[in-house]
Length: 420
Ligand code: SF4
Image (cartoon, rainbow, N blue to C red; front, side, top):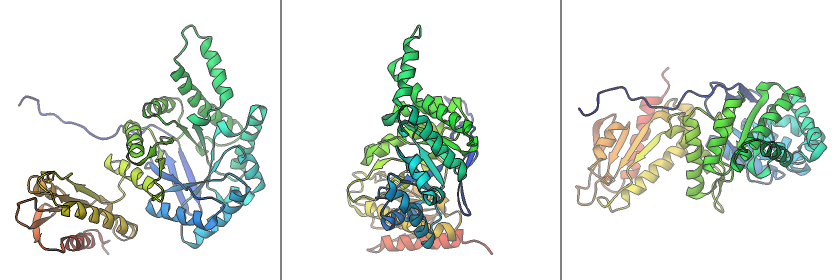
């Protein structure tokens, strides 16, 4: 042996100690922070004033697995619609807590639309967008007063693009008086962190309990986000909401979000996440929820749905059969999960392997709960199926996809149905 045999550990660091904040709607309680699992959030992109379209999208996001859904409350029409959206969700049997996203006029909207203030389960306040000069403190205080009055938690959400300019100027002044001034980048980080923590302390002075406060400091650069959250995590015990703001479209948005969030989550930083993807025109808003789930599940932090292990394919399997089967089974599992997760507890731990040829196919399939090794180019046209490591049958012919689905379904029935 070139290397001594030794224990090699894996897994994320212990979570950073944070208070737990309860986000409540009727009997539904979503805990953020403490020892609670990392919570997934999403945000609608409908016009909030359009009650039906917004309620439908919230339902879709909740069904996909979003545990909190944020809606913008940007004008009186939107504020007036919020109670009707909540009623519509009640009619549809959707109890996901709603978070109201407020900017500029939140103090007025929460005061003028008390039913909106009550229907929301949490308020997001951006300290950079509550007003200028003396109005800033008054309007921030008015929003905190509403949170206290209606017993709602808040997220104090600072954003790189709307940083409090007065505070930034103050920190720049302080920096220029230092014997050794910090870099412009460090000043910016400091300003973001200070804005969040000072606002949280101000909210506590105004009477909001510390366990009603969640913080975020969103930026759009991966290294910036990691630096800012590592630092803010050292200075407070409020739960932290993670998200790379304006992550972008398609694979770039997914990769950038995953790169940033996985480093922080691995270090135990982050109590709730949102993936800010720009959807393609006509794209599915739920994709941001699936990406969030996949980040947490592939890191071993939570389990949401059976994982499909599939090889990338190569010149040994030139037909598209194996790609189609991997896609087919992935879609099938996703479609079934809303029902299965209620009927078959534990099914989210199942692994399914779809492999392209004999090189790694049988080996990888044996490691999965159910695995299929499709024939590569020139191999005999037969697909052995392995169940819990043992070859159980061989599929042939045109109906391999349907037959394989049935095998998966039978496995779920026989292994995850609750015992009497
Ligand atoms: S399992 Fe076969 S088809 Fe898949 S990547 Fe490996 S060699 Fe290629």
